[in-house]
Amino acid sequence: MSNIILDQFNKVRSWSIGEAEDLSEDLVNIQPEGFNNTIKWHLGHIITETEYFLFEITSLEVKLPNTYNDFFAPGTKPADWKGEAPLLSELVLSLKSQVERVNQLSEEMFNHMLKKPVHGFNTAADSASFSVLHESLHLGQLLSMKRMITYSSK
Image (tube, rainbow, N blue to C red; front, side, top):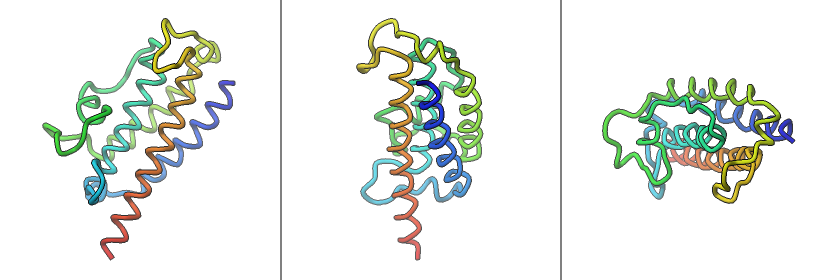
């Protein structure tokens, strides 16, 4: 089971990284009309929530700066940010380093029962498979925003 989840994770994450590497710092900070967030927020949110679903929920070590939750947790938005959010280049590095850590997770970890159900997830595999779905949804938002920003600037 974990091979399927890891294959899906790696495919979606490679798309996220490819898109992120094709962006500029200026573009990721534009908030198109009708959207609550920016592309930068979506990238940071993908990283933050993957860390939550694959590491925090499963009682593994979380390896993100504490500020990521301040900027990218559910319910946050750039209009409320205090301080400087991470640069796009830092987010790309975080996306890449997280891939390495996720791919080091063992089959046993995916089969691990959570101490108690979280968000309806009973096993680490449940949480991990939702993480892939979650990233896909935010990647779709990111692509829509990119298209809207690029189209409106022509």
